[in-house]
Every structure is written in C-alpha cells, then in structure tokens.
Image (cartoon, rainbow, N blue to C red; front, side, top):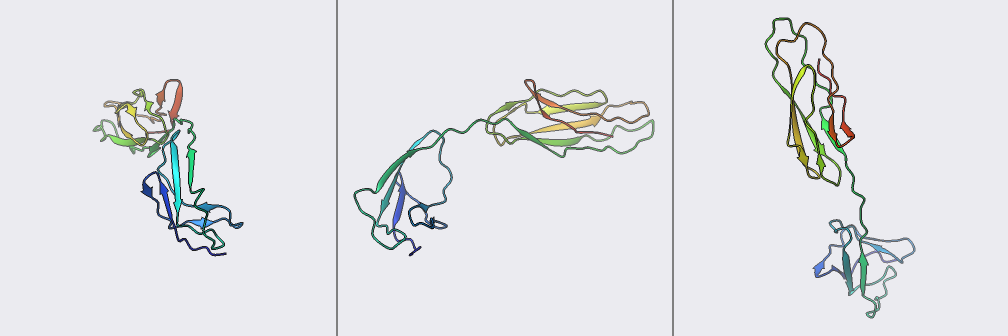
Length: 172
C-alpha cells in the first residue's frame, strides 16, 4: 500500500497541510489531523489530484464532501493555584503578614460568575468576578490584623450560583 500523499485537500477555500496524515489499515479512510473547526457549522472538503492508499487515482466525480460539526456541551469548571496557603507562625503582637494570591482559572467552555468569598480570620478580595473560558481571576488572602493567639484554618470557597467550584484553601 502506498502511504505517500500526492494530492490537495481543501477545507472551503483553504488548503490543508497533509503533514501527519495517514491511511487506515484497510486503505479506505484518510485522516488529516486538524483543529479549529467551529461547533454546529457546515463545511465542505474538496479533494484534488489524489491517489488512494493503493496508488490509484481517485475518481474526479466524487471529490467534494460536506459535513456539519456537532455541538459541544458547555462545561463550567474552574481550577485554583495554589490550593493551599501558609502564613507561618507569628507571636502577638505581630505585624500583619503580606497578602498571598491564588489564581483562579476558568477551565470550562462556558463563562462563570463567581461570588466574592468571605472568611472569619482573613481579608479576601477576588477580582474579576466574571470569567470567560480561559480567563483568570486573582484572589488575595491576608490574615486580619489583631487576631488573638491561635491557629486559623479556613476553607475559602468561590461560588457560582449554588455550585461550589473551589475549595480547600487553608491559611495557617
């Protein structure tokens, strides 16, 4: 079976690279790696000057093929980095430690709206609250001034509606 490519493949009016392309073992399907198609969109593929996997010229009467991409379910997910903060041990009276930051990234396919989190022993600020897919927000966390001696562990949650999308950030 001849696995070389001697032809042109067009998606609409754009020629596609055939680098990394391959024939199936039965010689019936030719796969071209390609990304960047829009969901729920019609496309036409044109094949010209091509030989099949056995080296025979492909017929010229069936060189145009159309297809429509399907829709993708919207996902709503976020990630946080880091997931744990540690402010160390302090003696009273103490100087308020410098704020630490957590980056929250929308890893889903839909936009998310976060709510400003609250905590008992920490000053928190989250901005921005509206995240498009791939966008990030910064959460600053700082122990409150004048805390009494003790250990302060809190789980800080960022919510969107009733969904808890982020948790388990602790400060000591």
